[in-house]
Image (cartoon, rainbow, N blue to C red; front, side, top):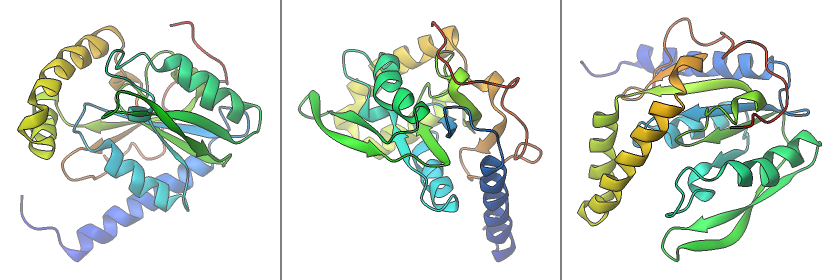
Length: 215
């Protein structure tokens, strides 16, 4: 792949702006909020893209699922997300959730999630079955698990190699039982950050209403 040109950068900005406009125009899915999930394998670029999208939305709040997960239960955050974030937003209030400290191995402090027209939730499993009824749109970062893991290992260094080995097993089991990719309405290249043509304005699934799936 050759170097990106000024035209490529302009096209990327235009696509991101179009996505932001499309998200603002969606019906609310969680009380007054349009909840948007950014999902994909660990290392696929979710946090970076969510930050870019939040900026394009004028500073939309971003919930990072790494703040809600724990060592013991990497995918056991559903109830915390529901009670601490989704239900307050659905009621038209600011939300605040506990933040897990991965060094201290306990929850330490809180993060405020202001009520806003669009709120982003980013992390592995953000588009899981239990969350989809609350979503206006599911964004998927398109990068295969092996490539995403290599990127993550390079980013985190050898001291976290053991963590990545255990994580890969947990992530594979999660997506095998509860895949997100088939429900994505927007697909983003995990390498280039480009939004796939034709996926800017499509709905993620059939029309959704605010509620909680049982699993």
